[in-house]
Length: 490
Image (cartoon, rainbow, N blue to C red):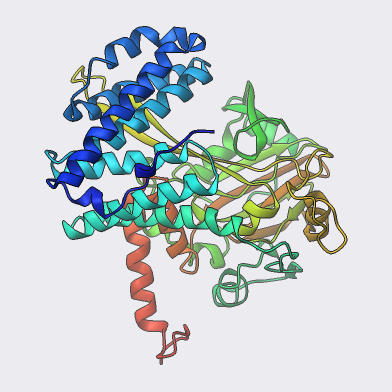
């Protein structure tokens, strides 16, 4: 476990850029950086990166620490991609120490300090999910948020506010009581039809899933023969469920195969979704819709072609988005664990790994491209090895596995039916028969605020986040009464 000196957490002294206390902190932070590099050089297990560290050790001036952090960060990314994880971890720690030295020096511009603080938040989170680590990361995020607000930089301020929300959720999870959590819903309704108003009021706003009869003509009534006849040449990559993998939904890529016609027809949007989706989806209204740089769902709808018995791992759809899936043929079993974010971290073993990856610019300028990566994973909730870290009993149940089974809610979705899933709810899908299904992620007004936070940080779809926030502000202006309740105004 990483040891931290008393000055590791940012406080008001950091703001005293030119005072004697600030000078002492700058000197101490550079000494700490030098000691950290020296310890890494003395570690025989890190011999592969010793030549790099010998060069970095020569960067002893405080103003050089950002350059050192970039060099260490770029190398950490390349070593991780090559599978050298201990070396990558050591380089990330040294990059964090260098950034701590940089933010404490006085002779830097606001832009340089703000950029370093954004990086530092992620570098601290890379150290783990312990409470002291989260508190340090929160301190840097709050400092950066206050600094950017004082400079009128609302773009950076909003990003760091989103980071604060992410960190506070993890802290809240660690303070939850041992009592059994209350599920967000206990049943899934089935409706023959579903208007936009009913969907909004009874399901989206209350974060409840619902299954509806798919309207006639929504999607072509194809089976596997028609799929083979029309889609024989389209290329795609097969994915399979791997319980031990750390990737999203435990779905790992396998062999390349082919499909064609249906995906092309769906991409041209010749088949529309029911009105409760088409009329409420804000993503499709955003000026950047369809652009990979501004739309995380630019390549939707998606087609699922899956054999009987296949399944995915427990997961939550990205950007706090909602999910609609129409089953064209076959049957699927949907399993839900209706818990909020903090409860998922506390009771379901959800892990949110946040990393900062740096890549050198291709133009040879020496600049770096910085990218925040967040990978979310759940354990196999049916596995025997899944246990709570605490030995205390919860309502007579000795393991989170038992409680996860008790909270699990199953619903079967058949051909001709569409399921609408609220954002942020863990779920798993098992194919009871050979199935073909079409899906679409979307975000409506009741999910827009929470989605905008995630789209700013750790994701980077700023235009969509701004659009969603503007839509929420406009909607509240016409639907909110004096008591804060959202009701239609006459």
